[in-house]
Amino acid sequence: MRKVLEDWIKDALLEVQEYVRLQIATARGVFARPFYFYDVVEQFDQIGVRSLTVVLLTGLFTGAVVALQTGITLDQYGARPFVGRLVSVSIITEVGPVFTGLMLAGRAGSGIAAELGSMAVTDQINALRALGTDPVRNLVVPRVLAGFFMAPALTVIYDTVGILGGWLVAVYQLRVASSLYWLSITEALALQDAWMGLIKPFILGYVIVTISCHLGLRTKGGTQGVGRATTRAVVAASVAVIVVDFFLSRLLITLLY
Image (cartoon, rainbow, N blue to C red):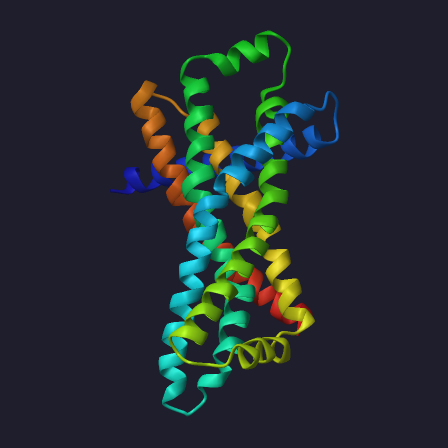
């Protein structure tokens, strides 16, 4: 039992060490030449544009169900007209960044881990090194930049669609006046809420992509290893989104409110 525990601790420390090394190499690669502009644009499309459909659908129905549930709860206190206030604040500050991060972890994170894992097990990564190309600069940096900048953009879209979904339910299901719904939103939202909703996605997008790249590059064991790496990437990135969101919330509440 003791031997198993020691091995587990060693493996965990090794993973942390390699992950930190990847962060350092990525930070250097961002500011070093050559800059692979075409690869960056391609990853913006892969991670951002191609995730748009799932973000739109998730945002619409999440906003709708939040409005439905909060409307039923507010009815107990005769406060149904304030449903817009709860929908907007909850989606912008918490639900939007977290759910967008989870969608990116499931769609983009799995794709990154599978792609890099396939390259690792077929020695394409070693081939790049043999040709004098830095794999981190060529493969990781474009994906990290895309995740870092596209996560906030997708979150803004998610927030907008979520509030619209809440509006549909509030007006046609809960019979709340449209003007009252939007008025409650403008009265409830503060500048601090917007900052919190915009800062979180930058960090969450970075965490999702770097975890997926790390696990993809360390893939071993052929096609079965690619499957394991993909599963680990989705699970690790999803858990990281929840954990990082908690600590970010505590920090931003302290700094902004």
